Length: 393
Image (cartoon, rainbow, N blue to C red):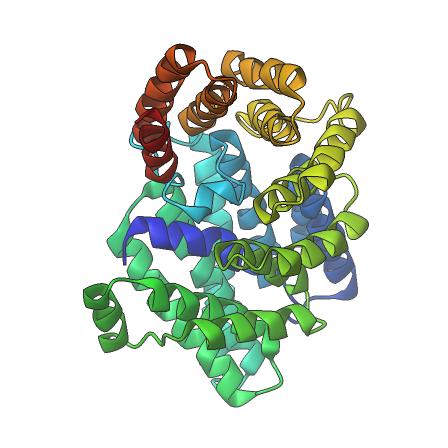
């Protein structure tokens, strides 16, 4: 299983933000508060709140895992690979190496995760028939797999951790079939395995992974309907996988729930617009992207790397498809001047080329397509590079 597929798991499974783990009520309440802060993009606040939860109960594995999750997300946030677009193709794995995470953040992540793993393993050893203990251990090991795949880019190490996470969550469901929350990681792996090429799929079967895309999606849907604390993680997973399956209206339904619950999450607004665009709902995409841009214009919280460029690209693309050429060109040219990922710049050139082609100006379109090919290929965005090459012909 390659690191690109495991990177998909990282976003889809979302390593299950902490569920009840025999914590005291104060720690449990603080963890719930911190989880809501993460979903509202208040990551720094979440880190502080998870640390308060640890202080309230130093034996709460969920609090340590929550802290590790918040720290891991801060790393991916800095790298700018937290959108659905990053995981629809291969752009989650750019051709240029990402900078290493800050040493203090990586160290704090390892310390928190090691503590979560130690507490969870002890619980399993003390009571092997405790479904929640297996669930907690599987979620912690799943977080290790996600971090290893997305930050350390070590496919083999991630694969080993992923196998253990899968086994622990299956064990939790075997002990207590009501634990649908344990199906989030199992279902996500089933989906991923089913999408592998035949040799990799057989290798995954041999070491104990299950396949079946439909069953995998069903398990994630059941986790989203289950009133556990990873319900929201399951919804985010479904948004990504529904987009991959071109079930855009289903993805929009989940996004609407999250938009209502977490109104401060700019990326949910961005994904609402982007998913409407993929679905061909151009007018709605324009409305959402324009309203979202205005709503969050004065949001001074740190932004994801390249986030402003993505907003400009998506809004410009929607306006171009709506026939608002002048506004679209302004947005797309702005996307080229803002710091961001190469695939974003490549797609901006692609849309500018389309505009020129539509106007009958082939001479002006050609350099835009050439730039799109170069930039998209430099960031592993081959689908859009191929589209630019097709249009240039």
